[in-house]
Amino acid sequence: MRLKTLLPIAALGAALGGCSDLNLTNPNQQTTGTFWQNQNDALAGMNATYNSLQYIGTYGRWMAFALDGRSDIALSNSPWTDLANFNKFTFVSYDFDVNRDIWHDHYVAIFRANQVIDNVPGIASMDAATRARVVGEAKFVRALMYFNLENLYGNLPMPLSSKDPSASQMPMSTPAQVWAQIEKDLTEARAVLPATYTGANVGRATQGAADALLGKVYAQQKKWTQAAASLNNVITGNHYSLLSWAQWPTLFTTQGNNSPEGVFEVQMSSYDPDNGEVGLNIGKFCGPPQGRGPGGPGFGDCQPTRWLFDQYYDTTAAGAPDPRRDATIFSSISSNQNVFGTPFSVRYSDRLNDIFWKKWTLSDLKNDQQFDEPINFKVIRYADVLLLYAEAKNELNDQATALTYLNMVRNRAGVTPVASGLNQSQMRDAILHERVVELALEQQRWLDLRRHDMLSTQASLDVIRTHDPEFNFFQLNKSELLPIPQTEINTNPNARQNPGWGS
Image (cartoon, rainbow, N blue to C red):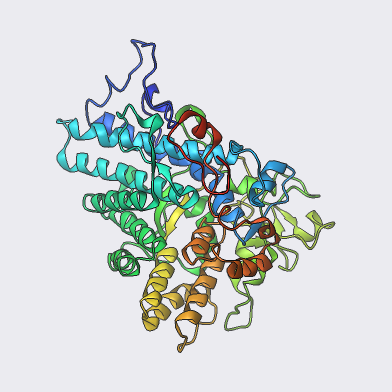
């Protein structure tokens, strides 16, 4: 699905403080008053909502730094000091690009979703099933955006209508209120979304995507019974499957777009700003730097930690290391590993101890990584569903079922299965380990750390500091959340800054 039709100009002023039509009216330009007349308008509006998921503050770039870069699987030696400090929990400006863009672009998507939810039900000429489906898609996107914001910021302004004149001065909703709204949106969405799509509609939110996200929502709140039920709906629906190991590395290249393993993917396009398409930047920003070789790899602004590299300690039946290591990370340890056409030992002859991200790069396909690549970002893939289901069953003291689903993912990679007989604590560790090696740089680790309270106590923080020295700067009761951008605090008298970040 490549979505090129945008909303009229009124939708582009969609920051939380700018949700209104332009003061001057161009008679040749549609506004929200003249739009929303027929099914084509509804689909165009929904396409614009999906397009906002490509933005650098949603899935195009910065969320990789917020959810993985700040976790224990990654660190930053970026020459851009502010970016490196963001990863080290020491950034000073609350309007720093990463923080500001994440906040702004998520609310752009929310505003566009709200426009669809507000206006599409009134299009009487639409087919009823399509009308319900489109509204369901918008509720899914809105829920996804609030899910991200809640995990990053905690208390939030939560506009639920594009027509609310008080949106720019909305009071903060509590986490409980935000979670409840997310659950409501996804429950309503799953009831009207189809199981699958065909043709040009492939890539839109499905019932399985809503169930999977709902499972993640419940899991973050430790509602394990509900999480297991929602995730089981995805599994028993039989619409998704694990790719073979030979295909696994392609999941993170253009060859893996919309595979049977993708439960929900952001449909990335090559750089086309006139149509709101910006492509995936993660490979460029997190990929290996140029070094002493030709071509244009990445910037190396985010690197794997040595702790992550060492987590790939499992072996195959033949005694080989976990193959996911070399499919995820570039290193000198991997024999004959080329980095964009040049051997690692040649390109980085002066820094052989360094390691770099391979995932989300096109190193195996060409000698140059573009700034914006049409690689779909996998927001949720089936391996994540299986592992989270195993986690939920383990928390419900069903270690036997947990083991089955844990080993499904391990078997695909060809590593030795986990043996039976683990208690709940041991199984929890095994599942979290598997999530680290399977889902590295897929924006899951920060969620895992928060879900299991590994950022909440001094004892757990001391352990995390052995994984990543950047956590020496982590402050309890502050660094768990990002600061609300200062522009929001300045323009919204009802906004309140997060604890530890000042007034």
